[in-house]
Image 1: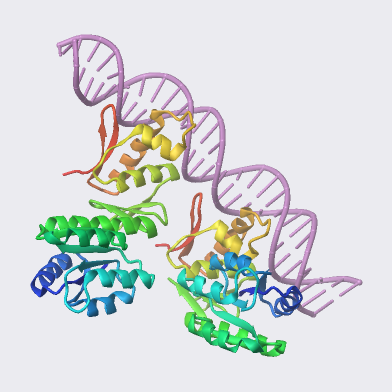
Image 2 (image 1 turned 120 degrees about the vertical axis):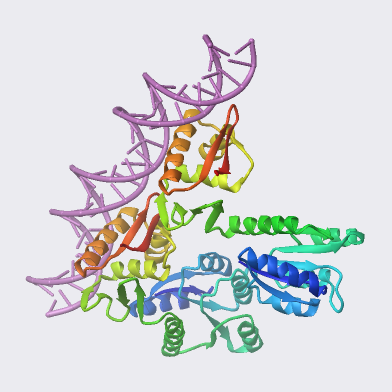
Length: 224
Length: 224
DNA sequence: TTTAATTTTAAGGTTTTTTTAAGTTTTGGG
DNA sequence: CCCAAAACTTAAAAAAACCTTAAAATTAAA
């Protein structure tokens, strides 16, 4: 799960980042509205935590712009106590929840979990494609009675493939979503994981195949 | 593809509806501006055919309101001959095309197809010509249940042909667009790819053919 | 701390695409 | 009808993309 934190209070953000990472989330940070908007526009995040009061571009503007651009990533707004009317605005413009500063990290975590759960509920716990299922709780690949465990990266790649049913995903997207936008991960790394995954698909006797689209990336297909 | 027809002339609308449905479009009708606006606001349509002269709310108002609300569905305006200045207004306010009443249904259908094609070009998943389709996601040539993968260059050439449906493209254009302005790619290279493509068209049993125009270039034709 | 698992890097081999080249066929004007 | 230009086809060389494996590095677990 990938979270974007947008706030000009660097201290707060960095502290949150550490906590969230400990809770197994993958986190990116932006220290002003402009950068936050840019990152958010990629649409690769599962949740955005967004402060209202920021220099340059404020949170409400970021929110409105995102919704206009059909980016529907769940958004959790942060606001100072005095900005209550802003909060209401935020909810009207399509924020999913808000929390007032200062807050207890426990509460923030609880709300983040709630939002992600809501999102997950929408997509379900077990994803399926053709003869294969992916159990998001146990990280297992399942076909009939056969199960096989996936590593975290393997899991993330297969999850992206299965969530994009049919459509192809280019390697850049994999890198962005799984490794983050500033990384020096190479395409070869993905190729290695795809190789692993193909082996495991065969191992459980699945007909489903990861088709490669030369020069682009991969897509899932139901072999024959 | 989903089309919304808005006009107070019930007869006209219903007749059009029948024809469009025969052409495999999904059609909704509204018999006044108010209902039309309501339906259009949902944003689920791929195209809206909108009459200018209507009771209650006229077409121009509907158009303006939609664009204000960031509904960017392509709109084809209908207008009587006497409403020329309205037409100009319409185009200024964000209509995509207009046609004057009375019109020949063939022409309307052609314009509808043209607008939808433009949309497809932008969001673009599958392009079609005659009995053949080009899947821009997987780089595959599709006819009926038969698919065959294209290389990137093959794909680009076929894409240009299909986007220019009917019109011929000279070899210089191919080179410029695909290889760039400063390249030493020769015409023969294109000829080679055309040869490959023809073989693949035959392989999927398509009647569509790439016709060569001596001294110029190529064009797509539906064989017999 | 040791062990195990996961992740990444690296390298060699394979396949596919792209280009070049050369011989063959088609076309249309003279 | 003949010829030259244009177009076609095929094979093969060159380049690019991809796959697989093993080993190294990192991280997590016992």
